[in-house]
Length: 309
Ligand SMILES: Nc1ncnc2c1ncn2[C@@H]1O[C@H](COP(=O)(O)OP(=O)(O)O)[C@@H](O)[C@H]1O
Ligand SMILES: [Mg+2]
Image (cartoon, rainbow, N blue to C red; front, top):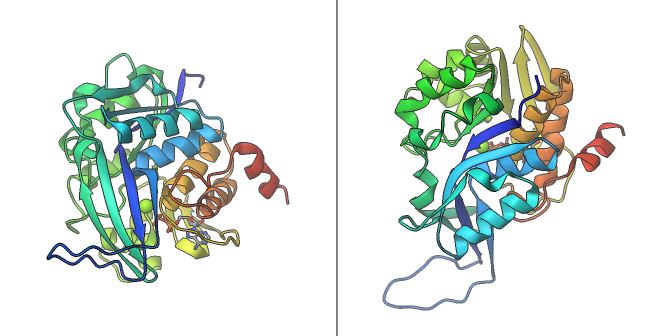
């Protein structure tokens, strides 16, 4: 079905500031410590998803807000440079751009997050005009975008009434309650994309196989991402698997979101589930070769080179 927008997502827009060092633990008493390095990147599950979808050639739009500040500019520029349609990104001077600050040492990290624009999208930001234009809606960061949570049943039904398909990657629930209305919306989801820990937490199971069995009864296509080992899908009672590419990993931030975009690109292009998984794994794996979620993402020609090897 030809529509003006292939994929729409609702943006948890923020930057990630990552500080690296062997002694990265702050000390009060006004002590100053020198660190080894830092990186400042666009963050946000939905924004990383949107960049990857656009790089694969899907007409991708994102509804969200950035603050009227330098971080907001960085986010807008990153999205637009990747090819995302910037028309629905608001600059809102009443809110600050969200920032997630990570203190990263070799084996662990601590994260301090200021929400700001991460949770700025509301039901009223989704205009009646845009809904019929959209072929596929991707929902990410379900547990961070709490302003939208009560409205998801209505939002999803509206998009589906106009013929759209819907995918969901909740990401981690900071409260670890694994609800927020998720069970009410699962029956309307076409593709559900948790990682293995999230899948086990949702299903209340302590092994991935049991979680896959339980969750696959809820949705037509279940995809469980399994980190370095790749991903598993279950559809129509069949199980499919794909492996990751061997890459020199810089960091795995946003790998699951790039995976999601690769899978949805395949899904919307009429590929088989095996091919969708393979494209997802190529995007997820290659995204880890550079810092942050966006810089390492492949464009379509690079994905095709890997597919046909
Ligand atoms: N260490 C890694 N090496 C290669 N590929 C990886 C690695 N970690 C993640 N990936 C790729 O990214 C995808 C998603 O990663 P995963 O960590 O499972 O999801 P999430 O980021 O949602 O937790 C994996 O399916 C895989 O293709
Ligand atoms: Mg994830």
